[in-house]
Image (cartoon, rainbow, N blue to C red):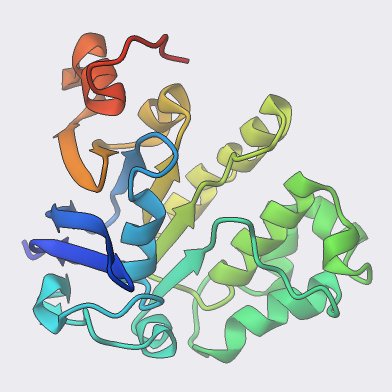
Length: 240
């Protein structure tokens, strides 16, 4: 069966600086994959490339077998690929509900996600729907960012650094929503620095270091020492 997303020898640059070197990953229908790695490993650049924020050569990224590497972000959204960006990137002048509604502008299709089903997923957002989105707590803002992406009813949800800067209890609440998102049939890519969290939710894991894939496999098949080496390289650190 053809993969939903495949990258082939993906490279990505910021000006003259190369951030990603020859990365090959795949995402299959209904699957959740996690991309782990330390800060600066190239994970966010990979997500920006797939989502069209960074332009690449067309054949470096395939969606359902078709080259999309050179498509702009709005065209990628219209194909059913939505990004929850690192740092949330909410619109400060808009309310919670208005931020959510923005997510539906780029792709109006029938699907499981509406304002009401988003509020069912994150009830606190219904209570705060008239508040400015950036007046919410960090965890609630992350819920808005996820909800905004879901409003386009994507087949593929890209989640970049969901847990960064959030308290563990909030992270647990956010990740608890993912079983409901998966139940709609969406495939998910989660970018995480937290190894334990990534291994818990993913069908398969890719580890990145210095812009390259250093390890991949199913969580049950990956040895702790191998993950340690792939994540940190030769340095000695404790896994968390």
